[in-house]
Image 1 (cartoon, one colour):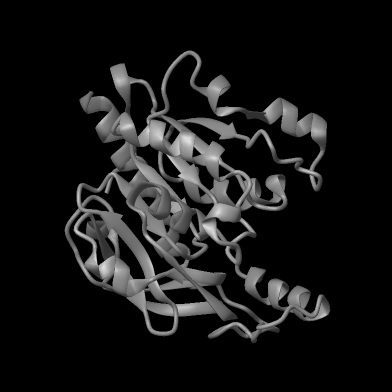
Image 2 (cartoon, helix red, strand yellow):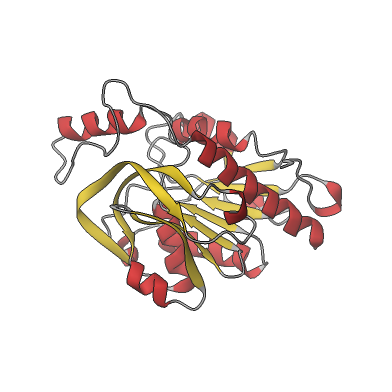
Length: 272
């Protein structure tokens, strides 16, 4: 499948990434190798105004990140990615940046541009647009899970294997019963022990992946050791991961997933 992407008037599509992860630069280094193989696009790193980014160099953040208003001052975004965030244990109404995120998400969605949520970002986007609830767990879902594709139609599902590996690190997930009862959203992939892995709107405009397809191979083992050192409650050894010699078996899924979504963004932008 070709990964050359075009957008409005033949230019690369403009994609914004709302980076909510604790260490912004670290997350950039995880995500960009996956997206860089998806085809050319114009990238806009979006910052949350209320966030301090205290684990990053303030000068670098100021130079690299823009507010949503700044990023869209001259032209709208053709697509938006919302990252994970270390807030999955909180009710949505207690997340301090939820109103600001809602303004971005609703604006992009209202323009008909594709949205992609990752990990908590998937739950946040699903809640803001469709009112989907989440389940909060007493034990962390962590590990590499064999995942079954439930539908093969659509711009992203059609590029994925019938079974693939997905990696997870979260204390919450979609309420699967509520998702299945929805008339606007469907589950695309699920894994035993991890629940819904990928969901999307029936019109394909909103895509939600509860895993971390951007993680590198040893990340889950590192997180487990960190959580044990910090005595985090409800932490278990990651499923399917050799702590001493971890393997990344989800890379092909990650590349296909991101490439298909960026292709969707470019196709929809070019059609306007």
